Image (cartoon, rainbow over all chains, first blue to last red; front, side):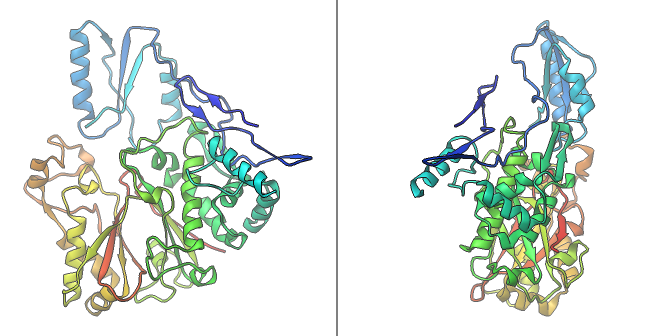
Length: 115
Length: 336
């Protein structure tokens, strides 16, 4: 018995429940994978608004690349926020407040760009 | 019954409950025994990843230990190891998803090495021994199961390394210098488990050097190659593995602290060369503390270097294990 769950990104999540069945009875196997208490954040691949928000994660050349991106996109008529947000550590998860704020953004969020 | 068990193994592997190798199915009776050995109740909270809204309960660790093939007698060690893996300082999700392809390096030291039958001699970095193989596998499975946000995060490791399946090293029970864990604040008499995120080991061969300095120079040179991640923007540190034949020379000339200082002082590379070859950004970030025209160490400070004594006699090899630059802290816990 399985309940593999496909996600919007095409990723197949590990099953939440597996059973071992003999001739007469079945028993649940113990799920080894901790799950988020609420539904994981959903990534929307097509932005609702034609706008770009840039996030620097402080790796080498990240800011330089993002500034260039800002210039090129504007030349092409795309609205780009003036402020380039900063995530303090590339190797750690985004702080909850920043994630909450960006999850409300209707435009495209561009983060994790460096060399 | 045997066929049903094989079906259960296949079922686990086909549904995301595996590291890619066959697992022992986590039957409730086996998980209960492992929980008891670890000294936990199934619902005990043993860790949290608040940013992902994930709470980790003890039954997850116990199920993983069963699946990895661990014996219940490893319970106290696995308890300490679980708490180390879920310590926020370790950054388990970062280790799981990074392009750096890091693994969890587990170091076991102290009397527990002999008590549980860890291999610490021949092939110490990849021993075909149950304790090493399954404890190392447990750590990687915990990384994979707990670090992937319930399965929604995908690892972006560019090349990774074989240690992502199992990577556990045990130190000799009797050491020339003090035991490994004394470098992280525990008393020499303790048994301990230490973890860090790490790249794969680099072998350092020196069969003809006649002094401790020549051995340390060889080790330092191994830390200094152009491809070393440490140059990128910050160092994660290094673990130096010294087997007996190299140690026989090094200990005649150096204490552990002197050896670390020697490597820190001597193992350096011209900053401009690193920039020219593309290993340092032309506009480096402040954290990288790049000084043009200076000799640069792959270490930010001498305390990023630690030593472990293990490996067989009869071969003049050492090894250097670069730690991942994104999770610079070693988490070291006593085993009680």
